[in-house]
Length: 306
Image 1 (cartoon, rainbow, N blue to C red):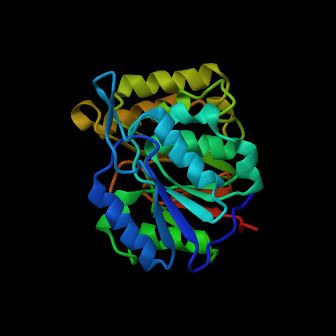
Image 2: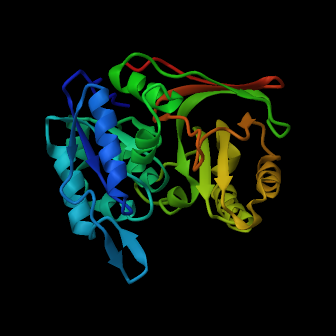
């Protein structure tokens, strides 16, 4: 995997909206945060717009304008990192039009999560690592000392990768695995299965999260992975946060996922802080990571990026 160049003071940092519409004040907050990091924010032309497709789907702009903004950031040699303003829906519209060869020749950091999982899949297909992480809202609401913001800054500037130590969970399965780590929003990534942008691969450490998907819907997705032969052959599984489903019964969701992976033997970590929650820690997509699960807790750490 290709590591984008680490950022230096004065580097350009693009903000784009490839999916849903974003509150303008969140973009303004991200601009201030990026300036405090010592970088120069560049807001894309259609970043703050609002567009309604089929009367019910809200995007930041029509697909061709969202694509133009992303291509502007990709092909501008001065831009060294791209922050997606928010998720929502719509990144999938852009995938087939991206010049992944150009991205591989001039790699740059991508930051985002949720629907931006689709763009992480594109970066991975180009062979470039990316950062699954909160976006403009988090930069607006929290200062630079916040855990997530501090970790992102350290990754982007080459100051070091995070090591996470998380509490034990009664459903955890002990074990250790070292492999490429990939994942993101489960529903988004399942929509890319059997395409050139598939990011859920046997042999990887997979991390998953989702929002507003019911227990039976998530189970259906996991059955798809089981029947496709992928779920049995993971190197490890990190179960993030599944929020805002009917009744918000987290216990039922975790019970179901535990049952779905019970036949296998790789390490599994439950209740990891990834997803649509306040503490949503950055994950370096495409890096080599070690997941160590024991009776006393979970450790996730990375090989050095070079």
